[in-house]
Amino acid sequence: MKPRLIVSHNIAPDVVARVHAEFDCPYEGQKMTADEAVAAVRAHRADALLITHHTRFGAAHIGAFPDHLKVLATHSVGTDHIDIAACQARGLMVTNTPDVVTECTADLTLMLMLNAFRRGAEYDAVMRKGWRTAYGMGEFMGRRMNGATLGILGMGRIGRAVARRARGFGMRILYCNSRRLAPELEQGAEYFAEFGAMLPQCDALSLHAPSGPVTNGIMNADTFGRLKPGAVFVNAARGALVDEDALIAALQSRQLFAAGLDVYRREPDFDLRFAALPNVFLVPHMGSSSVETRTAMGFRALDNIASVLAGRGTLDPVW
Ligand code: DGY
Image 1 (tube, rainbow, N blue to C red):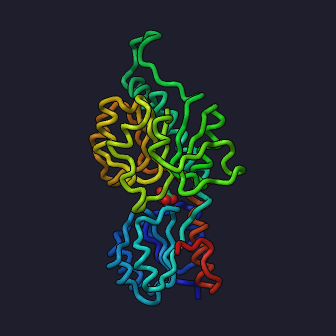
Image 2 (cartoon, helix red, strand yellow):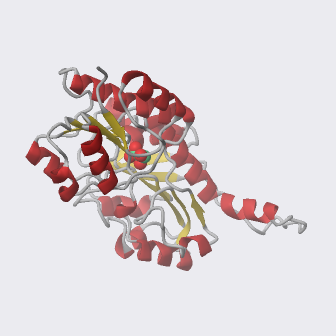
Image 3 (cartoon, helix red, strand yellow):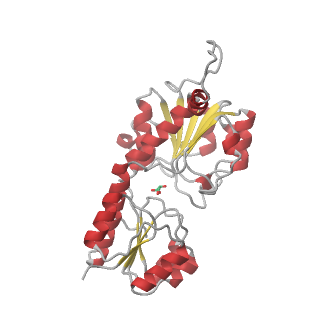
């Protein structure tokens, strides 16, 4: 008898193949709501549920899971879509997929940063309209990323992977983190215990902290105002970290030269005022979206499920 699994959202083809080979799972590629996922777990008498960051599972959903559900595995490093306290209260194991997302998310961060510094969205829009007007040497200029000072909020795995890449662009690296890193992890990056003290030195700021009570709304009118005038802002972490009214105002006033965004407070129905701004490069939450990484994430989630169901515990416990 194979273990019974429900997959609530669309996953990569090689992961689907493994799901069918190793589990009893009625996967059809559907995108379930949380209510539908709870109903599917009950109907299939599932031992495990594989979810993604797209769907919120609040206390009511966690409370509605039947006792035969042993593990909730999210196909993401972020866990802000799950009420972890509710899972703890009922002893439901939760796993995520750290490590495997690091390099791709850092690659995408550099894509956001380069496009913001060098006006990628605007140049692309000009070409798609047919170009036809030559630009003078003093027109339509971007800003130089090479040699600029980059501030990183959150120097975990992804923050450090971004710093490694940014050093290749000759950038000076500053960081703010809940604790100072050992020198071998700092690699010359300068530590700031206080976020506000780092901001005035930043030509660019990139967020790599999780969403939570301390970080939510950390970017607001005050903190955007402390950045160097004409700075670049990048967010591939979570939209909840940003007051989007303040971000839009900073982009409109040119306090920010530009922004590169992968995440938003509301997804997928993000604030359409962003789409009307020329100086923002927009991506629809694709940080981990390469075939290689999405496959590795799916496999890691299945490894976690298999480990729990075999009685060996979680590989990547969230609590
Ligand atoms: C993550 O891994 O948390 C990404 O945001 C996508 O799921």
